[in-house]
Image (cartoon, rainbow, N blue to C red):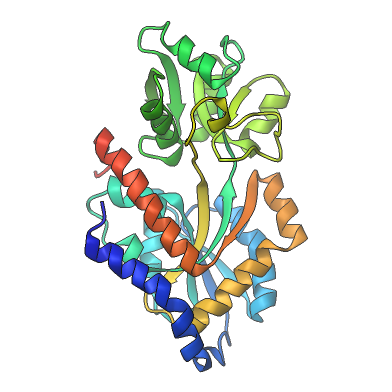
Length: 329
């Protein structure tokens, strides 16, 4: 959990940004006058990488400067995030940030060399990922309540595969278990793909995965979607109810993605970058491409993001502490 001092500092920063921006607009008079490095803390080809490449052109147009994608994968995003915390706070290095970097990794790893909430400057929230609870079609389960009931009939409950212990998909399952009588045995995999293959093959019963990854197999009858994790239904699968609608009020998980920079950036530069992100999220081409990826543009300002990431860190930190999950080597 965050200390009162850290919490107070973050909230004061969020509240002060608009005033500071209005007092120091001249600092961004010449910004940007050269390319901006956009660090993606994951390998090329994944959803995060593709998302950055989709928003880079409209952001470049808004800023009048090129955005250069720099993939720095490893340690659930921490390697790329650390790179940005050590960069100059001049606005020329920004980070595609995720729920794992800001809200879960700080509680899973005790040896991180930076504090994600105090060493990274919130710029904008960018998007959210539509995720689903998906079961094997051989399972006699069509909704969350049937899943819970069925799990009580098996020794050890159902088998729940995830992309890895402590990841957001694993924690989504743990949150559901903490709010219901669901019983399961967790089976961590090295990534989502092998978990999905074993679900299709009937070796495991349940996974959490993105709409984009699951949709072809759902249409082919190889998977069955029983609930969406967000507070509202996916536009790609509007007939699939949310977990909250399925008898678990208050359940909501957003796998959110945002943009951050190094601590100490000038407020006027944050304002310009924030405006570029907002313009990108309103671009029809970006909206359509995001939906093809199972994403939804979800803009929030730097001040709103600061408050949201703090709440998310406290929420997931409490669950991780309760489960006693640590991923230090």
